Length: 220
Image (cartoon, rainbow, N blue to C red; front, top):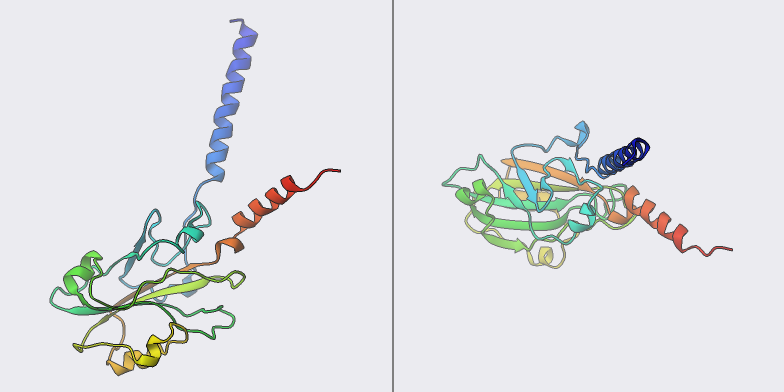
């Protein structure tokens, strides 16, 4: 191989390497913590979803289709490492921003409610107990902005916890404060939240849609 051909081959290989590095940089998944104003609930609780890992007090990344995937995944692993082994706990997951943060008429949307969770199970994230409301994945409607999904763990004082018949009719507009007062549940032992929005509202989805429309647009 001549010297000029070797230089051309080396330049081509270098271009491929640089192009691959640029593509990898562009595809990097950026995890962002919530802004300081949203971190008041970040207290001792971890929430793990598949692929994402621990997203306690995080913004669900706008990459790898995570904002759509989380609407289909099953219940997360919720760990409270400081749980007392001889105690029982109540786990609550709610959306205070239903249907939107600007107009939360359906606050608090009850996504998950489990009672009678043993402290040993709470420590390792094995949420077993009396499921009063089965887990419902985060599903923020399109064009409603970011929603907060909040998790609270309470020390269970009473043996029997239940929802009223009217509370069981709907998950929307749950009077969470009345439920807490009814069973003498004070401040949570631990809490956290994460934020996400409808995947169709994310810049990545909109950019991809615009590219597809340009490709499909008939040429004159």
